[in-house]
Image (cartoon, protein in one colour):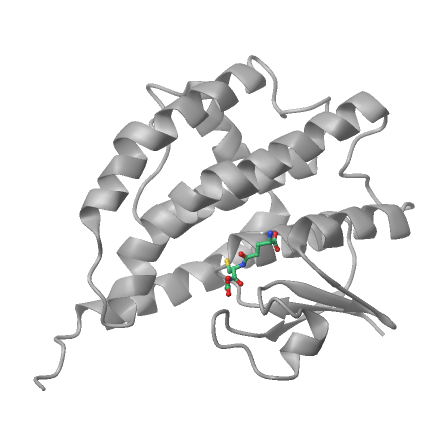
Length: 227
Ligand SMILES: N[C@@H](CCC(=O)N[C@@H](CS)C(=O)NCC(=O)O)C(=O)O
C-alpha cells in the first residue's frame, strides 16, 4: 500500500513532505484535508488538527519534519536528504527548523495568508503586515541565508537536502503571494531558489498550486455581497 499524505497542496509543510517523497522516488497518494476545519476523523491522526499527517502501513505521523526524518530513515536505500554525517545532519535540521519557524511566520502566514488566503475568504489583506515582513523582518533572514549559501549550490554538502527543500517551500508561498527574493540584493539565495524550482519534483507540484492560487486570487476579487 503506498504512503498517504494528508493535507492541502498550498501548505508549505505539506509541500515539504511531497517534495521529500518525490526526491526519494517514493510512491504516495495525497488525501486532501483542509487546515483549520479538519474533519473529526483527522484528529485521530493528528490531535492538533494541523496538516500534514502521513500514514505508512500501520504508522501514523504528524509534523512535516518528523515525517521527513522518518522517511529518510525508513527508506534508507533511496537518496538521503538529511546528510551523511552528524555535522551535516545537525546543520540540515537547523536550517529546516529555521525555515519552518522563522521564515514561515513571514513568508507564509504574513505574505501568502494576507495576499491570497484572507481575501479569498472575504477578509481584508493587511498590507501593513505584508510590507513589514518584506521590508523589515525578512531581510535579516535573507542576509543570513545568503551567507550560509556562499558560493555553494546547496546549503549543506554537495547535494540537495531537506534544508534546501524547506527554505524553497517557504519562498514558494511568498511567490504565490506575489513576491520573490530580490536577486540584486540576495543573488545566491535567488539563484538557489531558481535551481530548486527547476527540479522535476518541484515542477511536478507547482503548476497545480499555481492554478489553485490563481483561483483563490480571483475569489478574493469578488465584491462582498451587501448585508
Ligand atoms: N510544524 C508543523 C506545522 C504545521 C502547520 O502549522 N500547518 C498549518 C497549515 S500550513 C495548519 O495546519 N494550521 C492549522 C492550525 O494551526 O490549526 C509541521 O511542520 O507540520
